[in-house]
Amino acid sequence: MSLSVNSYFDDNVKSIAFESANGPCTSGVMLPGEYVFSTSKDELMKVVEGELVVKLPGAEEFLSFKTGSEFNVAANQSFDVKVSTTTAYLCFYS
Amino acid sequence: MSLSVNSYFDDNVKSIAFESANGPCTSGVMLPGEYVFSTSKDELMKVVEGELVVKLPGAEEFLSFKTGSEFNVAANQSFDVKVSTTTAYLCFYS
Figure (spheres, each protein chain N blue to C red):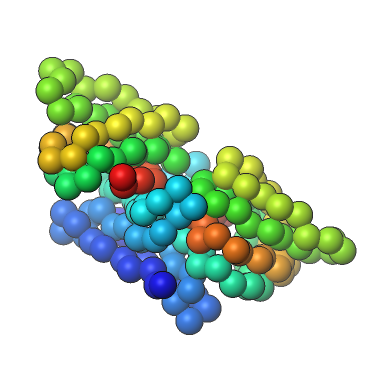
C-alpha cells in the first residue's frame, strides 16, 4: 500500500488517494477557481475546511457546502464547483 | 499561490500545504505505522478520517483521537503517533 498524489486542473486541485476504513478515499485541496468534475463511481464529498459552491447533476442552482457538510454524486455524472477560499475535502468512492 | 506536496517517513505520510481561511494548514494522510513529529509552530491537529493514537508532549499515556476529534501541540515539542488504519488529518499552524 502506498499514497499516490494526483493533480488536476493545472495543479489547482491536488489529492492524496488512500484506502480508508470506509473504503477508497481521496483527501484533496482545491485552490480558488471554477471546476467541472466527472464521476466514474458514486461519490460522497465531505468539506473538511472551507467552502464548495456546487451545482449538482440536474440542479439549476448552486448550493453552498461549508466545513462539516457533505453531498453525494452518482456515478457517470458531472458537477460544477466554485471555490472562493482554498478548500480541503474528502471524497469517498463506492 | 500554489499547492505544495510534502512527503515524510519514507512516503508513509504525505501532505498538501495551503492557506486556509483559518491560516496556514496542511491536509495530510498517514499510512499505518509509528511516527514522531516535531513542531516548529503551535499546531492544531484535526482527525478528519480514521484514528490517531497520540502521546502528547509530557504525557505518559497514549490517547485515541478518532474522526472529528482534535488536539493541540505547542511549538518546539515532539509527539508520538501510532496509526493502525490509514488516517487523514488537517494541521493548522499558528
